[in-house]
Length: 243
Length: 218
Image 1 (cartoon, chains in turn orange, cyan):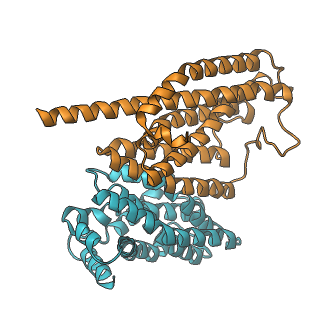
Image 2 (cartoon, chains in turn brown, blue):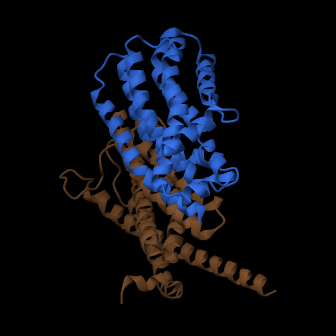
Image 3 (cartoon, rainbow over the protein chains, first blue to last red):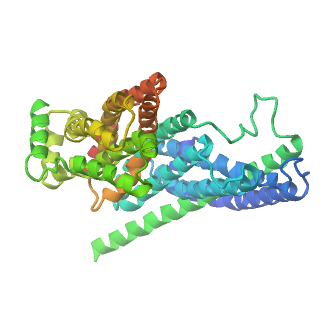
């Protein structure tokens, strides 16, 4: 029993189909519970009022936006090193999900920033690096779409993902250098005394867990679609060859 | 290697190579800026370093699609790939040729355009130094983008989309050096970071460029 068994598309599909209902249900329950708890059963902040509650969408989506890219980096590496097709397809499947998460994080941030900072957008390092991440996602997806041969596309996009990761990290530090921050520090971290109060952090954890499950479910689902699309293509090619 | 460099330089300099187009583009962008923001000299002086850096970056970007595409079309890229010279060296030479024909003229033209934009006297030296250090990184990163999209029809727009985010750190540190220089502040930190980005890009990116070129030539 090793993780490489799931490099077999058949095995991957069989297993993911078994766990999919649990993932969908789990993410639906967790996100519902987390959002309802967060929106209706937490106190208003004494300075921010009820706008603070957008954190329950903002932080989980930002978390997944970054980790989706990280997942793509890992699966790209697996494709480059071990050439498992499922891995490349999973990277392809994760990218649009990552874009949506990035957009959610940017939009919820703007909605929160308007009443709090008095502006929809500021060229703050965190905001800027998220915008740059968004551009990286766009380029990655555009490259996938532009190339017909699936193996070539997988090779090129995975190398772009590797190089892009380095430059994304560089950009993160570059924009830090370039402008002072307006954005608050991390809301949750293990080594800090001053985190968000428990009343907020508990439903936030629930939401984050829900978003993680939702992301996994979406990636499994989209990877399955990609595998089937690849199969249909192969079947059609074989038919043309025989005809 | 030297033969390849000379060949690329000759091809760029003689008819149809498009040498000087990047330079003309740089000039025209710079001339357009006062038309769009107004001719007040103190405003122009403030934005001059950033505008010149952005103009140089765009001029670099626009000349990238000729970098490998012509060799790809007439098949000489296949021959270069099968030549005894490693593909990593080939792309490095190509990037060097691009820098000599595009980056270096931009560096030399920048002070002249700086006069047009009323760049403060202290800024000239640092503008030239920052461009001299930064444009090699632009060429090398651009070569990677050109190698990624070489097999595509109409890959130019896609290449811009891919290359622009990669240019972000270089642009930030480069124009920071030029801006601080123009305002008479200490430039050492961004200058060192810019040099670091250039050095690392030149050292590492040819491997990635060669890898994607091999995939595209498969």
